Image (cartoon, rainbow, N blue to C red; front, side, top):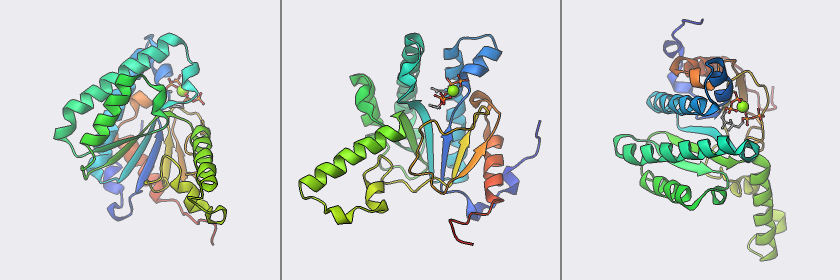
Length: 244
Ligand code: IPE
Ligand code: IPE
Ligand code: MG
């Protein structure tokens, strides 16, 4: 158990502008407690609320969370259904609470695969929080980096064919501007919980120079101090970006 209070150790003038999180381990957390996987997902959504609040009050500008991947549809039907139900409840809760907080929400990923009602709620939340000036919370839903890049390539090719852009104007910033994350700076810090050390199709283009932080904590157990600890470690790394 690490009982340090990491919040006091943070340099407030050099916080990461953008933290991305692969919220992993809900199923194993539930299994340890001999509960259903959906019980774990529910606890995971509580952890998300806690971390959003902590990041917002710390003054983090962008938080991107991986909530449902393009591959997660391959899980058993009951689990996918339970996740959709939970997503719907989470969105309802947010719709109710939006006036009480300053968080601006947007969704990355291809939401056209969700049912109409969920799509409408997502659009409503994005609209209602558009003018908020606190944390920018980007929720990755039916998100996969390869899918995002595939959609971007199709759009770029279409725009070239329709002479909206010139072939020679394609460079990294143009490619970035066709991704779902076009308005978001690249992540400074990527956190993955649950001990897995892989990226699982998350933000492949955007993490070129991101610092990685892996922890064995399962996502439902991840708390404010774990977030501060990850930021503390980030602040003690040297980022070179290819220079010396
Ligand atoms: C992360 O927890 C949540 C989603 C992927 C939706 P998992 O459900 O992957 O939990 P584990 O990895 O099986 O423990
Ligand atoms: C990544 O976790 C996706 C989310 C956290 C939403 P997974 O649990 O789906 O990833 P793998 O299958 O272990 O790589
Ligand atoms: Mg997992």
